[in-house]
Length: 561
Image (cartoon, rainbow, N blue to C red; front, side, top):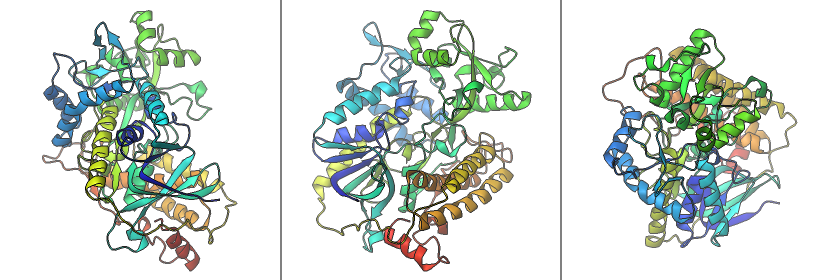
């Protein structure tokens, strides 16, 4: 039985971005937080490295800004960078006030250094900083009387005034699938915050959890918001490679933190020789795009399955203390990192682009905000500096909350259209679920083969043709059958994949995370790749003008493009 819910603010996503936003709001607003599955199942919980912030006396805001801008390869928005860096100490103070305890060295925080940073400025909790932040935020949010956390919910689409025939558009809430009840509920809210994370699941190999399917980006796009810089997909250079675990999906996609290289880890070829110095004078401390591309180059040149990351020259107690999670996980697979190198490969890790927001986290749609990996703030440019991602979540969560509260108090909403219930009268249960699994695999493999670390025009054209066919099949399936979690995620993922390919085709240069053999040089005046909505007829409200009336009527009744 479908249900209806009402809140002042609906936050879709329960990672650092979503929960931090909710906590900043909760003393003055009723907030509902939606979680796909277990609260600790998202990317925040997997983040190992830490949070970058200027806290040491020999460091400076200008140095952090300079490092971020350098990593972003000329495409960072300086105002966003300076705001984030300047508000970092305040963000750290807030999470510490919530109960988070960063590692310390005597009376000061213990700071580590990661690739691209000129100073030690990364605060951390051993090698499980994200898990510690998630635990702190979950405990505080769960205890707050104004925060209602609802698990087992997958958002389908935003409800907007325009979809209901109003002349003035704004967000009204969302249609949300209840995994446990197998029903679609209506969540009404004056404000919606998209905090669903990134879209690295578009690729065959990723360090991300299963839920990283670009839901927020796709929903914002379908609701009429612009997206930017979707071609900049960060491939983490060092994910655990273990052939014996390859039989179990996801078991081998374990991240080996940037901090291992920051603390002296060396990258080695299968013959034990070092190689990264041939690609960048910073060697192991080069930015992730350079290191990932170097590893990819050497693996292809040698036909190797992986390269190796070796920190065994460090003291065993030092390794166990600084990297207990990595040490323990590798031991489970028979790898003792205190005595032998770690086999590693690059894997899709972070989406630098997303729904365009301003410095208050506002999207193009009134009442709709995006925070974290879902958003394009301009902080990351063409490449993300290590440990700036958790920082962005914390800083822009507070900015979004402040703007929502200010808007709510200065111009409170009165009345408005009532969203209809989700209409399933024209659809049927599917008896061919195999179509979803085949499309899912085909999409991710096409993205890996044609839109990966190194690209060409021909590869992008091949990807575009395949994705266009997949999009039509998935839309047809969506129009005719009842929704499921898999269908919702696949629909989002195919839209995001199309946006990635379209953005990549727009960029006629190699910059940051986008490297193409057809345009190896850089243009003198780089611009963000902005994709405007409604450019593709399959992305708008009437995706099947030639389909039977039943399918068209079903889509219209759903009010979900």
